[in-house]
Image (cartoon, rainbow, N blue to C red; front, side, top):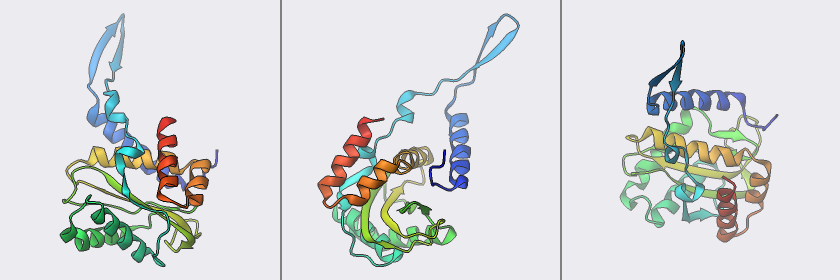
Length: 203
C-alpha cells in the first residue's frame, strides 16, 4: 500500500526497531522435544507512547507566522520555551541543534509533513511542538512539495529508546491520510488537541 512516505524512512525505522528489540529482549531459551525456541519478553509499557505524552499543548501553533523553514523551527522552539518545556536561556542552542540536524538531511518526509528533531541535553524526555502553515513552507521535502504541518521534537541524548518510541508514535499518525487532513484543517489549538486525543484513543 502506498502511504506516500519515502521507502527509506520505513527501512531506517525498521532497522532502529530491530536494534531496540535486541536491546530490550530477554534471551530465554526453552526446550520442547528436540526443538529450541527463543522466548522474547518485551515489557508492553515500553512500546506504548501516546501523542499526549509527547506534544506540549501550550506549544501548539495552529497558525505559524514563519515564512521559511528556519523561521518555523525558531518559532516552535520558542513556543516550547514559552510553555516552560525548555529553558529560555537554552533557546538559541536548541535552535542551532535542530538546524544542524536539518543540514544533514531534510526532515520534510513528504505529504505536507516535516519532522525536525534533535537530541539536546536540556530536556529529560521527548517533547514536541506542532505548527500549521496554511500557506505551505519550503522544507526541501523529498517529494518537493510544500509542508503544511511541522512537528518539532526534542529528546535527551541519554535516552535513545525514548527518542525512537516518540518518533514511532508521531510517524504512525502522520502517515494516516485522515490524521493529516484534519491537522491541515485545524484552525485553533483546541482543534489540534481534539485531534490528538482522538488519535490516541485509536492506539
